[in-house]
Image 1 (spheres, rainbow, N blue to C red):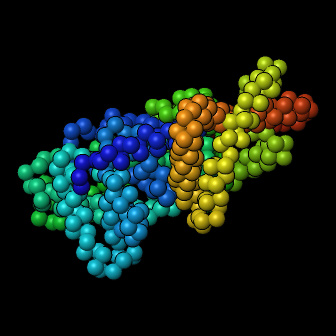
Image 2: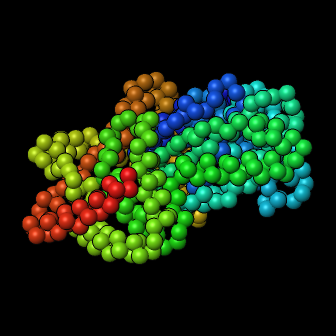
Image 3: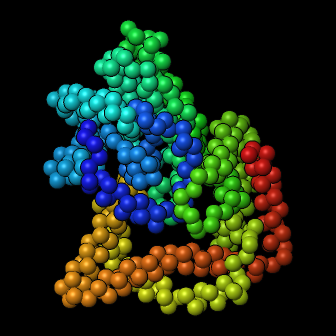
Length: 434
């Protein structure tokens, strides 16, 4: 693989800005574990179509090189663009014939040379994408690449595989939260030294070790039928750790740590305990839904104040103008997602890509108009209106909290007391777990 080209560096800040607007929060923890100046393979889980590579590419300090399904490169234009963004095709037998699989030889050699240059390759070893809180069995391709590299350069003493867990609160929705955690690096050169003549055993051990290390960083609800209680408890955990609007990208690990603890309890507790706690959680969250409020509303601070009411009224005209200005490209992006995407795993990435494309074209048109008319105030005004469009996101979220707070404060004393008692029982459980 060649050194990252100019297109990669041009697109990266634009993509970073787009995810900065799309996600409510990105919690990024233990990135310092990625070795510097060493050959590194990032092993990442894959709950969405292609959001994970975008998030990683725009937030890491070094350029990343990705192995991507070969059938995505069939379109020449799309294939050229993907290669310009450090993506290399990897062919699976399930997607192509043996002729395609044979092309992997050049891909593997490119991987070896990239690692030899102490760069980072990003691989999704599950081999497919699935929208679920699970880690599927890992394919052995990563282990084969690691073994091939050691054979190609037997003098090396370091080849690191870093397990990465990417977790979403609601992967299919905009304004969700993302929690990314990097595990301790695994020096697969040491595993190779233990099995220099046994390729299959080395590959199997790398795969098995990586499976356990990745599982530790992923919020997993493996038991069918337990997702409902897990979701209720996750909501409680998130309510107790509210995030401010800024900064969007943080280094906090605690939000993920608490959800990992809840998920572990859900996986290991008895069916009787699950049933017992569901009998408490269902009425509580069912009542919240009927009242049109959320768990976070219960613990404040209240957004229904005179100061917030005045702020919403005063800023409404400005954000309304920004919203109207940004509506055409955003509506087009949503139409593309709703009409062209069938699998839920691709809802978010297609919406992100479509929004990025439509807004780029939108601003390009405003820029051309500004040049033709010789008036730079046009593009300046467009940029200001775009900022007001982003502010409208804040305004709508604050308005929603204001409405929920008003509903809660208007509850009768008996209903409010019943809600608080049911919540106290659930919080006691969550505090024991985390």
